[in-house]
Length: 87
Image (cartoon, rainbow, N blue to C red; front, top):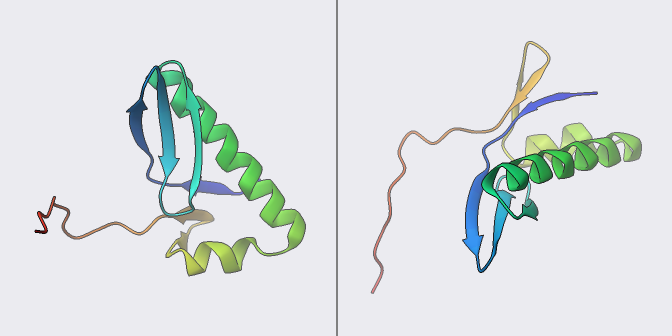
């Protein structure tokens, strides 16, 4: 099993919370924030398992901007983040 550290975002949609890993386009949901976090973590584990089985994990992670350091894959980190208004 690979160790992966990835950014996730949680959104509320109606009565559910959506967990999203934008770097890998993996998402899931739950009735609470904690359920959504757990659910997206399970979805990421399944994603890694499937990519490993297909032999594409390194290629997928590198194309998504991840780097491997000491056996752990780290998602790219922005040097700046802000909301931008476009009119």
